[in-house]
Image (cartoon, rainbow, N blue to C red; front, side, top):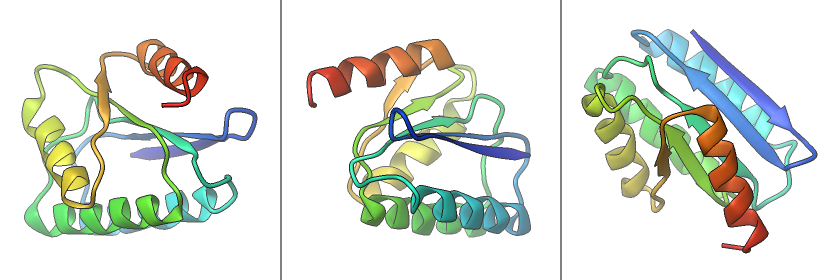
Length: 126
């Protein structure tokens, strides 16, 4: 299951993806995500909520890498990933994938913490 929500006032996307994601669902999520991100201004921020996302197969992970590459090309600014410390395999998969395309997401344990981190980074123009 996934959800992608835009916040135009903050030029921000909050995405949530959970469960065991197959290639069909990841493609649908990616298409929705990328079409919505095109409506934001370059320099947009992203909160990725993957608390309950299971580790991906190699096929799905490669699709994730390509999506992350396109997000960066669209003008990604800051990124914070909400992770479950008990789900380190998924958190590490996502971080390795984003590093491979040139960015590192900060990590938080809740939506509130992620929002606060982004607000602070944006206020300091980081």
